[in-house]
Amino acid sequence: MFELVLRSPEALVETVSDALVDELEALSVSVEDADAGSDEEQPIYGEPGLPAPHGAWRRSTLVALFGDAAAAERAATRLLSQDWTTGLHVQSLAAVAEQDWVRLTQAQFAPVDIAPGFWVVPSWHEPPAGAQKAIRLDPGLAFGTGTHPTTRMCLRWVARHGGRGWRVLDYGCGSGILAIGAALHGARAIDAVDIDPAAVEAARANAAANGVALNAGGPELACGTYDVVLANILATPLKLLAPLLCGFVAPGGALVLAGILERQRDDLKAAYEPWLPLDVADAEEGWVLMTATRMAS
Image (cartoon, rainbow, N blue to C red):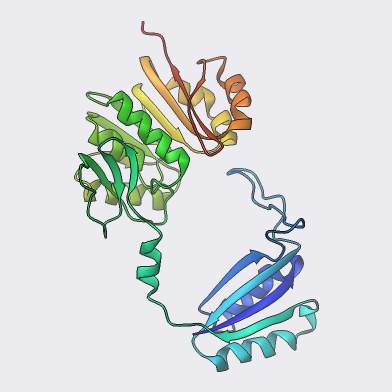
């Protein structure tokens, strides 16, 4: 395995990346901010539903992997010989040490302690001693492995409040981890919905792997009212969804929102105020969990 590292201006990143994969035999291409960690570091990602502020960093590092040295050298030579690649530079070309990539990836994911007796455990680990409830979940295409503070806070809330007899909506379910957590705590009926078909399939597969029942589908699956509505998304879509999500909360039911930075909590409170009064219920690493309860009839 050989690694070709290129320095690229913003205007060339997409075209060079496409050429490396489509025409020059690269096995993979990754793009990083060449100024990461310096005063010139540039955030470029926006929130879902909004365009990114920039298509790429002002200066990007492209790392392309090739099967052998000859392929990497051919790619570098062909790219630098083109008129349109002015500003593109080769930073290095070197052999990559053989690694057990599967074991290396697995080593990054250890069991996650959610609450006393409640864990999220990758399939290649045994549940820790004393684990009474465990979600078996592997990293995949859909968001939600239990390692992010927003996911942990939602699961903690479920564990603390119990789920016996709940009807639950997991809106923007990703991997289905919140829905599975609710099922393990006794929820009687669960709808897990997402606009991403890959997430819906992941939720179904993960539910089956954990031996729990849930209904997974697109947002049209959600109907009626629920004892608990869970939504771990991000602040901007949560604000837009305020009337919809509040409308799903049954009398006496709870709304649980995550994906909110501490500096965004006042905006969320204002957005939901016409329907339900939000309060901060938990906080971790700069993120907050916000909840509301609808008055019983």
